[in-house]
Image 1: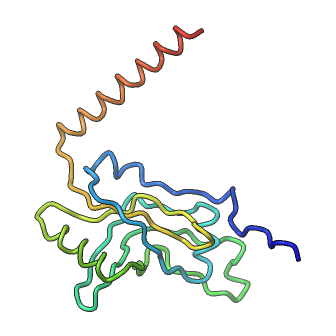
Image 2 (image 1 turned 120 degrees about the horizontal axis):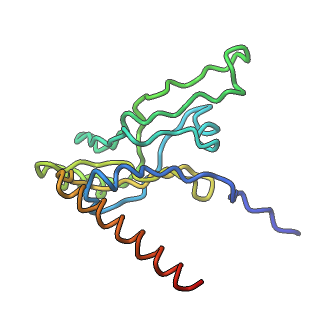
Length: 165
């Protein structure tokens, strides 16, 4: 009997929240599952997602994680004339994690100035996963230092590449 082909696709997008690393100091990270409905899955596979405004809230009893303000665009081929109901763009979505992990995140967020932000959205073994991180907001001077470091790294790489030619 022959093996079944792998269900993982190489062309599936990895949606990153690039602004999060600029606006926050990211501490501990955790990979969690996400509950998607209907056409949301196909829309995510097309890469039509915006994580930039997203944040995660912890519900204490029962312990649960909820993803807020993440915009997943409508899936165009399942238009209004097909009879399929489209999903709400920025609805609150439940995240899947173990209770002990949720309690650990809850304790980390209880500290003033800490929040949980989504960093990446991707597929792993056919399941949608979100990489979330406990974050603390950067000050304006921290952001300036980040920009200066990025500029110097860019100049160094240019100088090295010129020297190698």
